Length: 323
Image 1 (cartoon, rainbow, N blue to C red):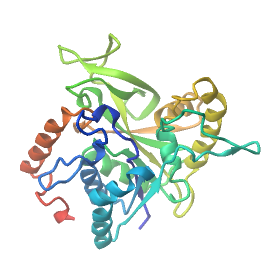
Image 2 (image 1 turned 60 degrees about the vertical axis):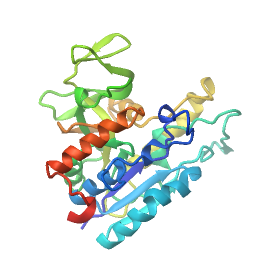
Image 3 (image 1 turned 45 degrees about the vertical axis):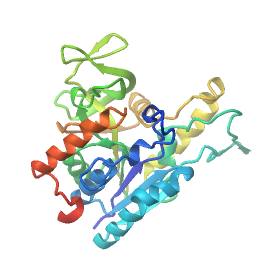
Image 4 (image 1 turned 90 degrees about the vertical axis):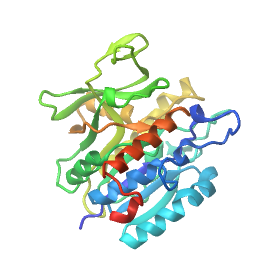
């Protein structure tokens, strides 16, 4: 059986999710299930059910203790019983390369993480074989994991990528703007032709969507940062090398103009590769409804949604009991 890794980006501290009473609240660790399960639990369950046999968390060193206490140790024990490997790696602000013989330093005053591109690079020494990437605080549904795993275990041409494509109207929050990768797709919905990271997307009164007053197609496809990258068994995925080269270019060309806030984002990098003709991106369609806890007010809706899925039989009350 081919080893397939699910890389979960859990390093982000949800600044928009901080309450006045608790400035350290970490949205990825908020319980939403009947027995204290968090959103990551449902992703792990669906991934293992789909066939993924390795789980790798990307976290920050400063949340390691909380993360292990709330989920890491528990998941590692559960995965061990199922023959699934689980481990952590760390995204650090000072994990920077040497470029032209010079060690790159963190700009003075910089505290903002480098972004999702660097989060994936945090696992560059650990990932071998095909892998998928997801956000920790997004619920994706079973369809996306099944389609992604089935795609990853096949052989693909060089520089092929897959993306789970969600319908924009199924991914919006009732409580504020969100950022999505708006996609241009080929006729027949076979491939993604472009991805543009777009912020401030909100629901409109008529059920549509807009960003900065510009109307968007609510039935269009968006990226939710669920990507798949093929590789041969036990080999370093080609995308890691491409991502490393792109990070060096970002540090050289982008950071000097915006040293405190520039971010190396995964969809932005993939969009650049697409427009340059350097990759192909297979669209894996899903009509499942996304939900997440971008804002504090989102939590009640997530809890209600999870309860509804349990009542429908999608999940057991004891989440992992059917694996």
